[in-house]
Image (tube, rainbow, N blue to C red; front, side, top):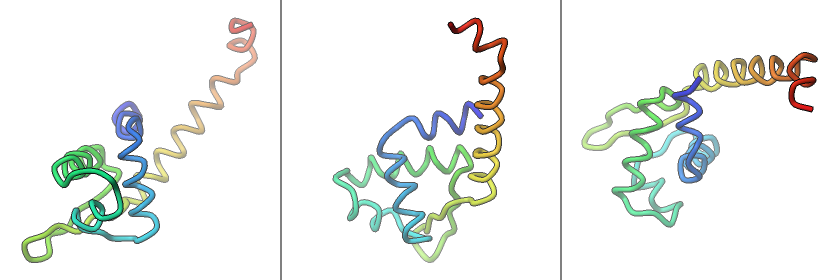
Length: 97
């Protein structure tokens, strides 16, 4: 959960995830064209997302194509919902008030 949360912690990575969701599969250059970021910056963010498991990459010739890992995203959503539900426990709410 912490690794996934770190991946979501940067606005550029969220923007990249949205681009991949819209286009299903993109090269680094295609992401660069869609964002006001350098190729090196986008490449680093793609690496972080890939290391977190939220996206996958496949080599096609000399480039990599990135796509969302839908199973990982669904797992993150499930774990996040469990965490939020646990924080709404009545005893926790009492302590927060």
